Length: 55
Image (cartoon, rainbow, N blue to C red):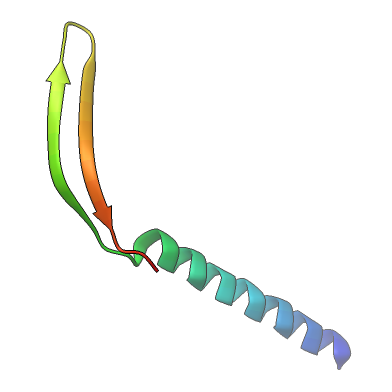
C-alpha cells in the first residue's frame, strides 16, 4: 500500500511540475513594441523591444 501511495505522489509531483513549466513557457503574454532589421553583405541583425508580463 505504501508503494502505491509513493508512486502516486511522484506522478502528482511530475504533473504539477509539468503544468508550472508549461505555464512559464507558453502561458504569459508578450508584446513586441518596436523592431528594425539591419542587413549588410552577409550579415543580418534584428533588434526587438519586448514587453512581457511579470508574475
